[in-house]
Length: 369
Image 1 (cartoon, helix red, strand yellow):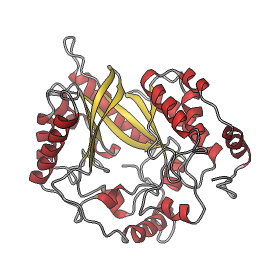
Image 2 (cartoon, one colour):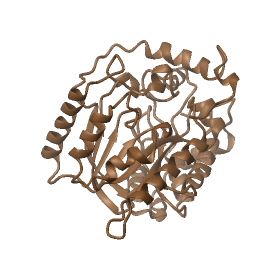
Image 3 (cartoon, rainbow, N blue to C red):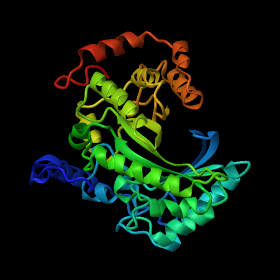
């Protein structure tokens, strides 16, 4: 784990100040969640190093991210959906998996080749998911082609990844890097680790890949970097430039084969939510997402984006009239990696977006809603 400078943790300043604010915001949560039911599960399609695959996406209900329980990231409200108490038993987690399999049987014609497991924290953190549960889940999906597991870089090591590759699974670790700028990650996102920690996690994935791969069975082990477009306190142009730089930085990191750029949306019980209601934050424009994807189409990685809540005030949006068209172009790009899809969409609101990119600055944002 990276060690930020001492002033980062100085009482009432830096990360300590962020954490104090976010703990007070999250204390407003009053909902309760069943530890035997997953938070979410759905069927979709995803682009992988082996091509487009039907995917089963699972958000397990755990005790939540340990960093979020301390205060956590400025935009992340997922810990508010976690079971109170910080712990879910092995039996309850396996009941969640049974529920997931029942959902898949109902909504998919056959078992999905790709399984993605998220916990809104770290699947590889044994304080969230025990080693017993992790291995049982690996056994459950051993007949699939590829598995994606979510984790902070701290918990990524070749021995743990071998638990999946030993079962014949192509294995990817999804890491919420958010940005390759340490300053933006610390000051705007309130995430404690450094880009060098991400690089170390990628190196562990490379080592696991080398240990698992044979001439007969080339078991991919890699990293899927998650980036955050437009955390609080950045102008629209600053957010675009940060994402372009970050995509290229990730693509040049050995072991990182996919970059997923997530436009920030406004989640409840977060600092972003507080800023939004006071007129101090606007989610990114979909035109900004398109610009980043088009500008980085030559990066040596699969670059994708899945704008959650597109077209809503709390999600990435343009003028509302063109939101669905731009979203379809983004989804098309995700699957085909062809930047010419963006040449097929236009709207009068592009002029407003261009003016925002040119004129908005940190002291007058958001310039337009």
